[in-house]
Length: 108
Image 1: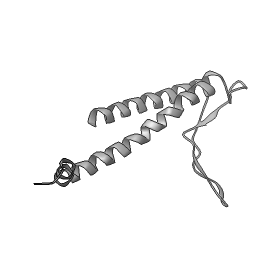
Image 2: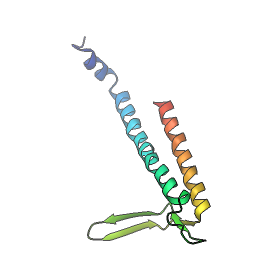
Image 3: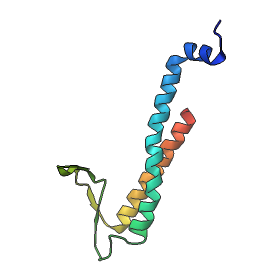
Image 4: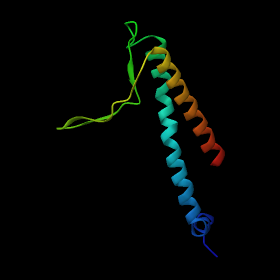
């Protein structure tokens, strides 16, 4: 018999504890990504920031990273979308992240 309850639980459920830890860490990625999207939706297409001229476009899903001593490394230039298309795309991404967060909560 183990001397404490915590020790007993750890010895008999070690693999399950690591699995739950990995799922929780993985679920934090879409959770924190969904915090910035409402700000991008409000400040971008709704208030018109970056869409001052008629027919203006902005890149959507642009993947780039600023490295020290090298500069900006661009992995994907993104899709050029107008104001309504950007609003629609950002709203769909937000909805997708909410659904993914809900599925993680359901699983955990």
